[in-house]
Image 1 (cartoon, rainbow, N blue to C red):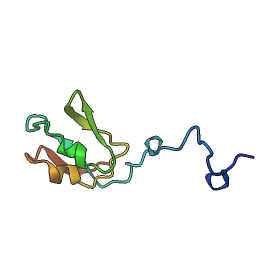
Image 2: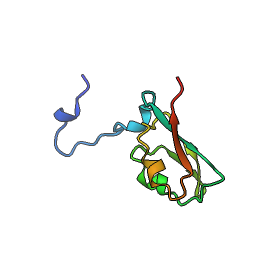
Image 3: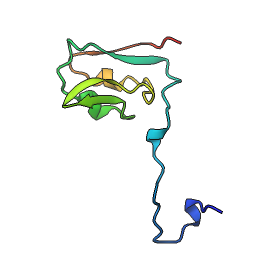
Length: 92
């Protein structure tokens, strides 16, 4: 029988701990962020403030959103100093 974490003895090692990265949680939002690349200054405030790690950054540049994790909270749009992120209604 596989032990649960509560039954593990003190000092036990969990070889493969769970991670929320495996759970896609963005399918219930009502609004989603859309990036205007022409306005974006790559300050990455959106990346810093996103509570769901849904901002895709490559080589120091904002590339887009990981919609499978984005909850549509709008924090990224609120924190963007140049308003390069707009929250739009999610199309079903």
